[in-house]
Picture 1 (cartoon, rainbow, N blue to C red):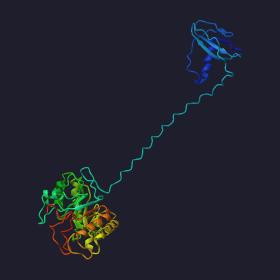
Picture 2: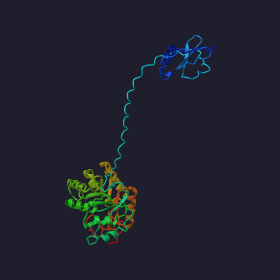
Picture 3: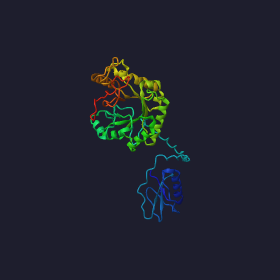
Picture 4: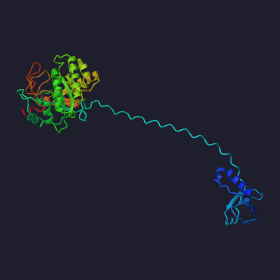
Length: 389
Protein backbone atom coordinates (compact mmCIF):
# COMPACT_ATOMS: atom_id res chain seq x y z
CA UNK A 1 0.00 0.00 0.00
CA UNK A 2 1.33 3.38 -0.95
CA UNK A 3 1.66 5.89 1.84
CA UNK A 4 -0.67 8.87 1.99
CA UNK A 5 0.68 12.37 1.98
CA UNK A 6 -0.77 15.67 3.17
CA UNK A 7 0.37 19.19 3.86
CA UNK A 8 -0.17 20.94 7.13
CA UNK A 9 1.49 23.55 9.19
CA UNK A 10 1.65 21.14 12.08
CA UNK A 11 3.08 18.48 9.80
CA UNK A 12 5.83 20.85 8.78
CA UNK A 13 6.98 21.39 12.36
CA UNK A 14 6.62 17.76 13.24
CA UNK A 15 8.76 16.81 10.25
CA UNK A 16 11.33 19.43 11.01
CA UNK A 17 11.49 18.48 14.63
CA UNK A 18 11.90 14.84 13.69
CA UNK A 19 14.72 15.70 11.30
CA UNK A 20 16.57 17.67 14.01
CA UNK A 21 16.26 14.74 16.40
CA UNK A 22 18.56 12.67 14.10
CA UNK A 23 21.42 15.00 14.80
CA UNK A 24 24.12 14.64 12.20
CA UNK A 25 21.87 12.67 9.86
CA UNK A 26 20.54 15.94 8.39
CA UNK A 27 22.00 19.28 7.62
CA UNK A 28 20.90 22.56 9.15
CA UNK A 29 17.10 23.12 8.43
CA UNK A 30 15.80 26.57 7.54
CA UNK A 31 12.45 27.22 9.20
CA UNK A 32 9.45 28.54 7.08
CA UNK A 33 6.28 30.58 7.90
CA UNK A 34 2.61 29.24 8.09
CA UNK A 35 1.63 26.76 5.47
CA UNK A 36 -1.72 25.33 4.15
CA UNK A 37 -2.50 21.66 4.60
CA UNK A 38 -2.91 19.55 1.45
CA UNK A 39 -3.86 15.87 1.64
CA UNK A 40 -2.72 13.66 -1.23
CA UNK A 41 -4.52 10.41 -1.84
CA UNK A 42 -2.64 7.69 -3.61
CA UNK A 43 0.05 9.80 -5.35
CA UNK A 44 -2.04 12.84 -6.28
CA UNK A 45 -0.79 16.16 -5.02
CA UNK A 46 -2.68 19.43 -4.56
CA UNK A 47 -0.73 22.41 -5.67
CA UNK A 48 -1.18 25.50 -3.52
CA UNK A 49 0.26 28.90 -3.61
CA UNK A 50 3.32 29.56 -1.55
CA UNK A 51 5.87 27.03 -0.45
CA UNK A 52 4.48 23.59 0.26
CA UNK A 53 5.68 20.72 2.36
CA UNK A 54 4.74 17.17 1.35
CA UNK A 55 4.60 14.77 4.26
CA UNK A 56 4.93 11.04 3.43
CA UNK A 57 3.17 8.71 5.85
CA UNK A 58 3.19 4.97 6.37
CA UNK A 59 -0.03 2.90 6.53
CA UNK A 60 -0.34 3.67 10.23
CA UNK A 61 -0.37 7.39 9.57
CA UNK A 62 3.13 8.02 10.89
CA UNK A 63 5.19 10.58 8.95
CA UNK A 64 8.21 9.06 7.40
CA UNK A 65 9.69 11.89 5.28
CA UNK A 66 8.99 15.35 3.89
CA UNK A 67 9.61 17.25 0.69
CA UNK A 68 9.43 21.02 0.30
CA UNK A 69 8.11 22.47 -2.97
CA UNK A 70 8.44 26.04 -4.14
CA UNK A 71 5.70 27.80 -6.14
CA UNK A 72 4.87 26.15 -9.47
CA UNK A 73 7.03 23.12 -8.62
CA UNK A 74 5.48 19.73 -9.30
CA UNK A 75 5.59 17.06 -6.62
CA UNK A 76 7.37 13.81 -7.34
CA UNK A 77 5.30 11.25 -9.17
CA UNK A 78 5.90 8.60 -6.57
CA UNK A 79 6.56 8.69 -2.89
CA UNK A 80 9.82 7.29 -1.70
CA UNK A 81 9.59 3.79 -0.36
CA UNK A 82 9.39 3.70 3.41
CA UNK A 83 11.97 1.91 5.49
CA UNK A 84 10.73 -1.46 6.73
CA UNK A 85 11.04 -0.23 10.30
CA UNK A 86 11.57 3.27 11.57
CA UNK A 87 15.16 3.92 12.59
CA UNK A 88 15.53 4.07 16.34
CA UNK A 89 16.37 7.45 17.74
CA UNK A 90 20.11 7.71 18.28
CA UNK A 91 21.43 8.13 21.75
CA UNK A 92 22.09 11.70 22.74
CA UNK A 93 25.37 12.90 21.46
CA UNK A 94 27.99 12.70 24.18
CA UNK A 95 29.48 15.86 25.49
CA UNK A 96 32.50 16.80 23.47
CA UNK A 97 35.66 15.29 24.83
CA UNK A 98 38.03 17.78 26.40
CA UNK A 99 40.77 18.87 24.11
CA UNK A 100 43.78 16.63 24.66
CA UNK A 101 46.66 18.16 26.50
CA UNK A 102 49.30 19.29 24.10
CA UNK A 103 51.85 16.59 23.45
CA UNK A 104 55.09 17.23 25.30
CA UNK A 105 57.80 18.62 23.14
CA UNK A 106 60.07 15.83 21.92
CA UNK A 107 63.23 15.46 23.90
CA UNK A 108 66.12 17.10 22.13
CA UNK A 109 68.30 14.71 20.21
CA UNK A 110 71.41 13.80 22.18
CA UNK A 111 74.39 15.90 21.31
CA UNK A 112 76.80 14.07 19.03
CA UNK A 113 79.86 12.74 20.81
CA UNK A 114 82.82 15.08 20.74
CA UNK A 115 85.37 14.31 18.07
CA UNK A 116 88.05 11.96 19.12
CA UNK A 117 90.91 13.83 20.62
CA UNK A 118 94.17 13.54 18.82
CA UNK A 119 97.30 12.96 20.83
CA UNK A 120 98.95 15.57 18.66
CA UNK A 121 98.18 19.18 19.60
CA UNK A 122 97.22 21.47 16.71
CA UNK A 123 99.71 23.96 15.46
CA UNK A 124 99.14 27.45 14.24
CA UNK A 125 98.62 28.24 10.59
CA UNK A 126 95.48 26.12 10.35
CA UNK A 127 97.22 22.75 10.20
CA UNK A 128 98.24 20.02 12.60
CA UNK A 129 101.75 19.55 13.92
CA UNK A 130 101.91 15.79 13.84
CA UNK A 131 104.45 15.03 16.55
CA UNK A 132 104.44 11.23 16.93
CA UNK A 133 103.02 9.25 14.06
CA UNK A 134 105.50 9.92 11.27
CA UNK A 135 107.44 7.04 9.75
CA UNK A 136 111.03 8.25 9.73
CA UNK A 137 113.20 11.34 9.87
CA UNK A 138 116.83 12.34 9.76
CA UNK A 139 118.89 14.97 11.60
CA UNK A 140 120.81 17.74 9.84
CA UNK A 141 123.52 20.20 10.96
CA UNK A 142 124.42 23.29 8.86
CA UNK A 143 128.18 23.47 9.52
CA UNK A 144 131.23 23.20 7.32
CA UNK A 145 134.23 21.09 8.28
CA UNK A 146 135.94 24.19 9.72
CA UNK A 147 132.92 24.79 11.98
CA UNK A 148 131.73 27.76 9.95
CA UNK A 149 128.08 28.24 8.96
CA UNK A 150 126.85 26.91 5.65
CA UNK A 151 125.20 29.45 3.37
CA UNK A 152 121.60 29.21 2.21
CA UNK A 153 122.90 27.96 -1.14
CA UNK A 154 124.93 25.19 0.53
CA UNK A 155 121.96 24.12 2.63
CA UNK A 156 119.79 23.99 -0.48
CA UNK A 157 122.48 21.91 -2.19
CA UNK A 158 122.56 19.43 0.70
CA UNK A 159 118.80 18.94 0.54
CA UNK A 160 118.91 17.92 -3.10
CA UNK A 161 120.07 14.52 -1.84
CA UNK A 162 117.74 14.17 1.13
CA UNK A 163 114.45 12.49 0.30
CA UNK A 164 112.08 9.85 1.61
CA UNK A 165 111.89 11.30 5.13
CA UNK A 166 108.88 12.91 6.75
CA UNK A 167 110.81 14.83 9.42
CA UNK A 168 114.07 16.80 9.51
CA UNK A 169 115.54 17.39 12.95
CA UNK A 170 117.54 20.56 13.70
CA UNK A 171 119.29 21.13 17.02
CA UNK A 172 119.52 24.92 17.28
CA UNK A 173 118.83 28.28 15.67
CA UNK A 174 122.31 29.59 14.80
CA UNK A 175 123.59 30.07 11.24
CA UNK A 176 120.04 31.08 10.17
CA UNK A 177 119.40 27.35 9.89
CA UNK A 178 115.63 27.48 10.55
CA UNK A 179 114.96 29.91 7.70
CA UNK A 180 117.47 28.21 5.37
CA UNK A 181 116.07 24.71 5.90
CA UNK A 182 112.50 25.98 5.56
CA UNK A 183 113.46 27.44 2.18
CA UNK A 184 115.36 24.30 1.12
CA UNK A 185 112.40 22.02 1.94
CA UNK A 186 109.66 24.27 0.60
CA UNK A 187 107.26 22.35 -1.59
CA UNK A 188 108.16 19.00 0.00
CA UNK A 189 106.16 16.99 2.53
CA UNK A 190 108.94 17.21 5.11
CA UNK A 191 108.23 18.85 8.46
CA UNK A 192 110.81 20.24 10.86
CA UNK A 193 111.63 19.05 14.35
CA UNK A 194 113.20 22.28 15.59
CA UNK A 195 115.46 22.78 18.59
CA UNK A 196 116.28 25.36 21.24
CA UNK A 197 119.81 24.30 22.13
CA UNK A 198 121.07 26.74 24.77
CA UNK A 199 119.01 26.77 27.96
CA UNK A 200 120.47 30.16 28.84
CA UNK A 201 119.14 31.62 25.58
CA UNK A 202 115.58 30.29 25.53
CA UNK A 203 114.02 33.72 24.92
CA UNK A 204 116.40 34.55 22.07
CA UNK A 205 116.08 31.19 20.33
CA UNK A 206 112.29 31.12 20.69
CA UNK A 207 112.14 34.59 19.12
CA UNK A 208 114.40 33.45 16.28
CA UNK A 209 112.12 30.52 15.56
CA UNK A 210 108.98 32.67 15.68
CA UNK A 211 110.52 35.21 13.30
CA UNK A 212 111.43 32.51 10.79
CA UNK A 213 107.94 30.97 10.94
CA UNK A 214 106.24 34.35 10.44
CA UNK A 215 102.96 33.11 11.91
CA UNK A 216 102.76 29.90 9.85
CA UNK A 217 103.55 26.90 12.04
CA UNK A 218 102.07 24.32 9.68
CA UNK A 219 105.46 22.88 8.73
CA UNK A 220 106.61 22.18 12.27
CA UNK A 221 106.46 18.67 13.73
CA UNK A 222 107.75 19.47 17.22
CA UNK A 223 110.22 21.69 19.09
CA UNK A 224 112.83 20.42 21.54
CA UNK A 225 114.46 22.27 24.42
CA UNK A 226 117.97 21.00 25.12
CA UNK A 227 119.71 17.87 23.88
CA UNK A 228 121.04 15.34 26.42
CA UNK A 229 121.36 18.05 29.06
CA UNK A 230 120.72 15.78 32.06
CA UNK A 231 123.09 13.17 30.62
CA UNK A 232 125.74 15.93 30.57
CA UNK A 233 125.10 16.86 34.19
CA UNK A 234 122.39 19.55 34.13
CA UNK A 235 119.83 19.34 36.94
CA UNK A 236 116.49 17.95 35.68
CA UNK A 237 114.61 20.82 37.35
CA UNK A 238 116.60 23.35 35.32
CA UNK A 239 115.69 21.56 32.11
CA UNK A 240 112.02 21.35 33.06
CA UNK A 241 111.93 25.06 33.90
CA UNK A 242 113.47 25.91 30.54
CA UNK A 243 110.94 23.64 28.85
CA UNK A 244 108.06 25.49 30.51
CA UNK A 245 109.52 28.87 29.61
CA UNK A 246 109.92 27.88 25.97
CA UNK A 247 106.40 26.47 25.77
CA UNK A 248 104.94 29.75 27.04
CA UNK A 249 107.00 31.89 24.66
CA UNK A 250 106.17 29.74 21.66
CA UNK A 251 102.48 29.69 22.54
CA UNK A 252 102.47 33.49 22.68
CA UNK A 253 103.88 33.43 19.15
CA UNK A 254 101.05 31.19 17.93
CA UNK A 255 102.62 27.75 18.26
CA UNK A 256 100.65 25.16 20.23
CA UNK A 257 102.29 21.98 18.96
CA UNK A 258 104.45 19.52 20.91
CA UNK A 259 107.33 20.84 23.02
CA UNK A 260 109.75 18.29 24.53
CA UNK A 261 113.19 17.85 25.98
CA UNK A 262 115.50 15.25 24.47
CA UNK A 263 117.83 13.05 26.49
CA UNK A 264 119.42 9.61 26.45
CA UNK A 265 117.31 6.57 27.19
CA UNK A 266 119.15 6.01 30.48
CA UNK A 267 118.56 9.60 31.64
CA UNK A 268 114.86 9.25 30.81
CA UNK A 269 114.55 6.04 32.84
CA UNK A 270 116.32 7.61 35.79
CA UNK A 271 114.36 10.87 35.53
CA UNK A 272 110.86 10.10 34.21
CA UNK A 273 109.85 13.65 35.15
CA UNK A 274 111.56 14.72 31.91
CA UNK A 275 109.03 12.67 29.96
CA UNK A 276 106.13 13.85 32.08
CA UNK A 277 107.03 17.50 31.46
CA UNK A 278 107.22 16.85 27.71
CA UNK A 279 104.34 16.32 25.28
CA UNK A 280 105.89 12.96 24.37
CA UNK A 281 109.09 11.14 25.37
CA UNK A 282 112.04 11.96 23.12
CA UNK A 283 115.10 9.72 23.48
CA UNK A 284 118.50 9.34 21.83
CA UNK A 285 119.26 5.62 21.69
CA UNK A 286 122.40 4.13 20.09
CA UNK A 287 123.05 0.38 20.21
CA UNK A 288 126.68 0.99 19.19
CA UNK A 289 127.59 2.40 22.59
CA UNK A 290 126.15 -0.66 24.35
CA UNK A 291 129.12 -2.69 23.07
CA UNK A 292 127.18 -5.96 23.49
CA UNK A 293 124.82 -5.55 20.58
CA UNK A 294 125.83 -6.43 17.01
CA UNK A 295 124.49 -4.19 14.21
CA UNK A 296 121.86 -6.69 13.04
CA UNK A 297 120.33 -6.62 16.53
CA UNK A 298 120.22 -2.84 16.79
CA UNK A 299 116.48 -2.76 16.15
CA UNK A 300 115.75 -5.12 19.02
CA UNK A 301 117.94 -3.04 21.33
CA UNK A 302 116.23 0.25 20.47
CA UNK A 303 112.73 -1.22 20.62
CA UNK A 304 113.44 -2.67 24.07
CA UNK A 305 114.17 0.84 25.37
CA UNK A 306 111.16 2.34 23.60
CA UNK A 307 108.85 -0.24 25.16
CA UNK A 308 110.43 0.12 28.60
CA UNK A 309 110.13 3.90 28.70
CA UNK A 310 106.67 3.91 27.16
CA UNK A 311 105.43 1.45 29.79
CA UNK A 312 107.03 3.40 32.64
CA UNK A 313 105.66 6.79 31.59
CA UNK A 314 102.46 5.95 29.71
CA UNK A 315 103.53 8.23 26.86
CA UNK A 316 104.43 7.76 23.21
CA UNK A 317 108.17 7.50 22.68
CA UNK A 318 109.93 9.06 19.70
CA UNK A 319 113.51 8.05 18.98
CA UNK A 320 115.19 11.35 18.11
CA UNK A 321 118.64 9.86 17.39
CA UNK A 322 119.75 6.36 16.42
CA UNK A 323 122.16 4.85 13.92
CA UNK A 324 125.58 3.24 13.54
CA UNK A 325 128.97 4.67 12.54
CA UNK A 326 130.53 3.67 9.23
CA UNK A 327 134.09 4.36 10.43
CA UNK A 328 135.98 4.39 13.75
CA UNK A 329 137.18 2.02 16.45
CA UNK A 330 135.32 -1.06 17.60
CA UNK A 331 133.42 -1.15 20.86
CA UNK A 332 133.59 -4.82 21.76
CA UNK A 333 131.16 -6.57 19.36
CA UNK A 334 130.06 -3.24 17.90
CA UNK A 335 132.27 -2.60 14.91
CA UNK A 336 132.03 0.52 12.71
CA UNK A 337 131.92 -0.18 8.97
CA UNK A 338 129.79 0.75 5.96
CA UNK A 339 128.32 -2.77 5.93
CA UNK A 340 127.47 -2.72 9.64
CA UNK A 341 126.07 0.77 9.25
CA UNK A 342 123.62 -0.49 6.63
CA UNK A 343 122.74 -3.58 8.68
CA UNK A 344 121.98 -1.50 11.75
CA UNK A 345 119.78 0.99 9.87
CA UNK A 346 117.83 -1.87 8.27
CA UNK A 347 117.37 -3.59 11.63
CA UNK A 348 116.12 -0.43 13.34
CA UNK A 349 113.66 0.36 10.56
CA UNK A 350 112.27 -3.17 10.66
CA UNK A 351 111.86 -3.22 14.43
CA UNK A 352 110.30 0.22 14.91
CA UNK A 353 108.53 1.15 11.70
CA UNK A 354 107.67 4.66 12.87
CA UNK A 355 108.63 7.53 15.15
CA UNK A 356 112.36 7.20 14.47
CA UNK A 357 114.86 9.90 13.46
CA UNK A 358 118.17 8.62 12.16
CA UNK A 359 121.47 10.23 13.04
CA UNK A 360 122.48 11.85 10.79
CA UNK A 361 121.93 12.91 7.18
CA UNK A 362 125.65 13.46 6.48
CA UNK A 363 128.98 12.91 8.17
CA UNK A 364 129.61 15.76 10.61
CA UNK A 365 133.21 16.58 9.74
CA UNK A 366 133.14 19.64 12.01
CA UNK A 367 132.85 17.47 15.15
CA UNK A 368 135.77 16.45 17.36
CA UNK A 369 136.34 13.07 18.95
CA UNK A 370 136.35 12.65 22.70
CA UNK A 371 136.96 9.75 25.09
CA UNK A 372 134.18 7.26 24.57
CA UNK A 373 133.44 8.30 20.97
CA UNK A 374 135.62 5.50 19.56
CA UNK A 375 136.98 7.89 16.94
CA UNK A 376 133.63 7.56 15.18
CA UNK A 377 132.05 10.92 16.07
CA UNK A 378 132.21 12.34 12.54
CA UNK A 379 131.04 9.22 10.67
CA UNK A 380 127.40 8.55 11.39
CA UNK A 381 126.07 10.01 8.13
CA UNK A 382 123.36 8.04 6.33
CA UNK A 383 124.38 9.59 3.00
CA UNK A 384 128.12 9.91 3.57
CA UNK A 385 129.70 13.33 3.05
CA UNK A 386 127.45 16.27 2.25
CA UNK A 387 127.36 17.56 -1.37
CA UNK A 388 128.40 20.98 -0.09
CA UNK A 389 131.39 19.66 1.89
